[in-house]
Length: 83
Image 1 (cartoon, rainbow, N blue to C red):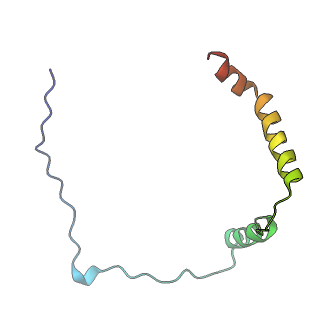
Image 2: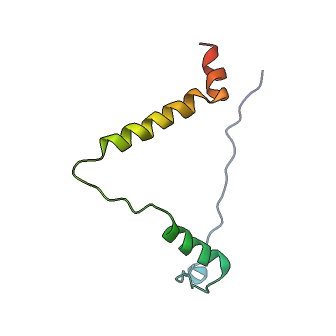
């Protein structure tokens, strides 16, 4: 039988006060990645607004499409065929 030995003592390296980390704000150098991130946040329709009464017809249509997608998904059907 295997025995577990709890004799490991891991030591973390110590940082001296003179080697403290300094953080600086990220500089925007307008590279392609930064531009893509900025444009992606502007191009999406994530600007949601809460209204007092949501449009029930839109919600019903959306949820109906979700149900149809799930029902037509072969992986979903195969997963639940065994139940």
